Amino acid sequence: MTASRATPSSAEPNFTTRISRFAPSPTGRLHLGHAFSALAAHDLARAGGGQFLLRIEDIDPTRARQAHVDGIVADLGWLGLSWDGPVVRQSQRLAVYATALDRLKALGLAYPCFCTRAEIAASAAAPQGPAGPVYPGTCRHLPAAERTQRMAGTPHAWRLDMAAAVARTGPLSWHDHGAGWVAADPAAHGDVVIARKDAPVSYHLAVSVDDAAQGVNSIVRGTDLFATTDIHRLLQALLGLPTPAYFHHPLLVDAAGRRLAKRDGARALADLRAAGADPAALVAELRAMREALGFVLPSA
Ligand code: GLU
Image (cartoon, rainbow, N blue to C red; front, side):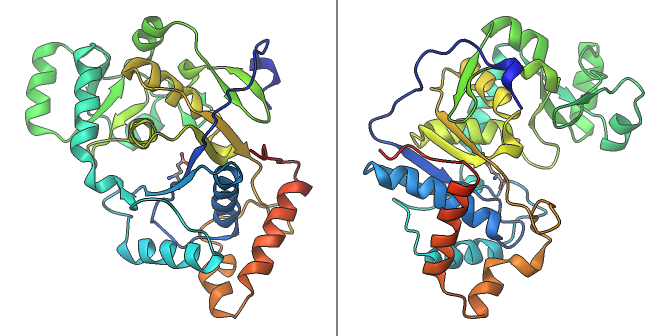
């Protein structure tokens, strides 16, 4: 998966007190894949007397629902997972993200983007990156006057000037428990969005800022976010934030080998709960799956 990016390793980062988190977006019901992820993050922290945090990633104003937040809390409680401290909600932290965005602007690394999704998709120049089409750079070099004029009247996102950002930080690496040291390649993602048109921040910026603010030093999440970590590593370097250790886990798949998705309602934890499933047995099964998948966590 990442062997070509692995660098000769020094030791794995070793935090004496692990602080991990589960950071779901309340845009649907939790399924078994979420339970697997939350349990692994929980177990990693608890094994060494560390802390396990719950953060609700509700920056998407059109898709986040309070009913899903309530469902997440109920599901985790049913599984017997407890978290430390208050539940942090990203929607309450917009001022903090604005400060981080201002910092990137002040460094000359951010520019407003007026393009629609359809325009970007239609651009023949848009190559594929690890997580979708790479932005072709249409708005990167707009004349200052045009930029100012359009900003006044048009909703816009903010993008990171990737080439300038990478030139500023130089080579970066991060550590994954399974893959070892990884040489980051954020440039493959192009000029990523750091503040959305419909929200004053993007996932990448919010997650980077929050993990640092909450002291999270051990991030457990699905391998679908592996390549994305290169972007987060870059933002950490630009904003002077510490770099956590990463534990990307394999994704659970159904009998047909398809990845479990939120829309796969049959496997929603709420349905299992309603059907009277035994949460302790489920937790034991998820831990056994972890072993079977070869995702073995350090015990302290
Ligand atoms: N909020 C993201 C999701 O639900 C996960 C973020 C992360 O673990 O970094 O997919």
